[in-house]
Image 1 (cartoon, rainbow, N blue to C red):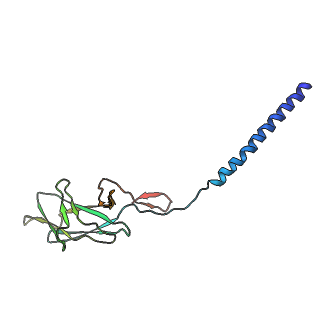
Image 2 (tube, rainbow, N blue to C red):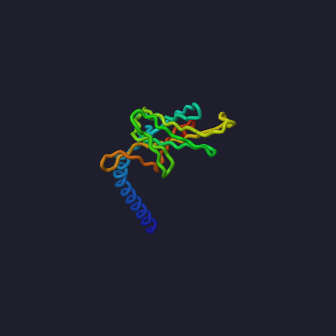
Image 3 (tube, rainbow, N blue to C red):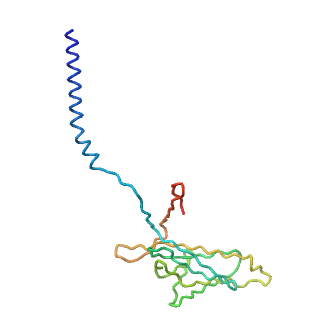
Amino acid sequence: MKRSIRHKKLVALSAAALFLTAAAGIRQASAYFTTYVSAGGSQVVHMGARTELQEDVTDMTKHISITNASQINDCYVRVKVFYAGPFEVTYTDRSERGNLWTYSEADGYWYYGPILPAGGSTEILDAKIGDLPEDFDRDSFNVVVIQECTPVIYDENGNPTADWNTVYTDYQETEQGEEADR
């Protein structure tokens, strides 16, 4: 019987010690959970620029212009022209302010020199296909223009520059609440 009373006292003391230890820890746990809170909501942040290509064709000449459709981001733009066949293409910079389009032999792109401001458009670059045979089917011939843009970034001295290697992805939320790449 003595053993049973000692055993009950030991269990009671152990339970009391456990309760006191837990009670002492509740204050720190309560402080932790009241100090750190979570927040909800979202805001769309557009990291890059968005451009739109305008092309008109007259007399086997493609007139190329790009508009910066972004509302806040200035950008740099470049274009490359692809076509099939052994035809000669001549390019004409129709800029009123002088040669704003510059060709790069290194990568085959035409670069628009000044920064394209948000909402602004480039001057026209003409790509003329020449020396076509008379029996050539002009209606089925296709000239593809690839245009790219990159947001203006600034170096450590505050000078604007273009980084053509960085990939910016713009996401749009779908009806199901998932994000889809645009």
